[in-house]
Length: 207
Image (tube, rainbow, N blue to C red; front, side, top):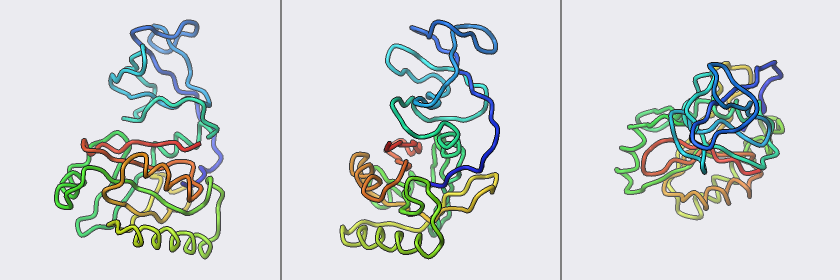
């Protein structure tokens, strides 16, 4: 996945119910703490994470899960969450983290699978490579997917700001979360997108 262009961003806040997080107080009051490196935006709209339920965020990013112990920069994670993952299928579709995609649900049903992953081999660990090297890496990934008999189609991960180049990718059908993680790790990626039976894309961090 691509590295975001340098920019200044405010630290987001999240207000939690349940056990809460003592100390700081975010906008609107209530126990809150800024999300820092090592944590990403928790399920906005009321999903339980351990003993804490996260139900508010300063900016409108839906979905995502609470991660810890990651070495990936917070701004980069935010860019991953904001990116549009576009699939060049017979009926083109766009995946957004945390937003159900009925077209993908229909595709899963048509291919008799319950899950898929959106993955790239470009720009290992978000280090920019030139187009020629990225094409070689994508060709290696495509060869592996073909050898394994997996159905896949081309796509591109593009941030809506267009501040950096879109990243050629594949939507691969019928890949479990663990298999997707192993594939992403093998191809030196920071993260990937995985979609299960709910057809809601999840951001999966690999480092």
